Length: 351
Ligand code: SAM
Ligand code: SF4
Image (cartoon, rainbow, N blue to C red):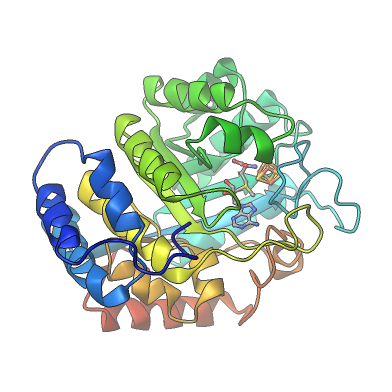
């Protein structure tokens, strides 16, 4: 695994791989594996610079903001890594009312952020009808771009949400490895997840895939396949952050993902998919106080500030440390804006 490895790649080889990756066309799997096997930050520096230059040329300096509202922490699944998993009885569960969700959407609009992300566990309390009516009210009352992240649903549901006005859907594929996927997801099938991603593309959602880096059992070859899968799915976005172990899950004793491999994957995805939207994830900021800056420097161009009301935010407990820091949204936004401008980037806001 990249995080355990001493540098395994011969000096010079990195330069050759990078030269090939900088060309157009699908990256070669062996080149990806070589770069993903390198644990020497200095050697990886040219990769990071190339990814930053590719980001600038392909999508410019703008950082897109998406306000996320985590409206339910109920989940019917049991993903081994996630604190919201069904059998975690220590977690107090919540569902936000339509009024509360709408108020949070208005707060996103008031912050001049053009996009709302509605995320939850897989919670069948929210029927297709309930969700369609919610999406319609949000669109009618706020005019925000709506991204959904609600997990796997039947094609008809995705179709209905699209008709109701949803624009984007984020469904991380989690891992390209069939065996690792099977071990981590006792109650879902990789085949179905990938089918959902294909439906979302067919229905013309802007579609997001993505992974956690540092999962137990993941190695450089698996990560290379993840990058190739993101490219072959023609994903419009990719959420890439570290795995962080949650104490009330079967993976509690596993080590966290590490910063360098996350940055390497981000940079490689930027080179493989030049126009993709890449968030600087909250999980990376939890792992490292400068995580956001680091991600923005190697290809990321999206930040997703949290607009979940603080009392609920604390309970959206995917992994430890998510809610450390200020609860004051205005302060969070000010800090964020300063940081983005400090990185020499501009901010996308509505007028
Ligand atoms: N339930 C939906 C789903 O699974 O697609 C959306 C919400 S789910 C909480 C959003 C993402 O959280 C997952 O795709 C997963 O990658 C991430 N996640 C869950 N547990 C995590 C952990 N321990 N460390 C890092 N990311 C985690
Ligand atoms: Fe549920 Fe999503 Fe967590 Fe899996 S990752 S347990 S589906 S909230």
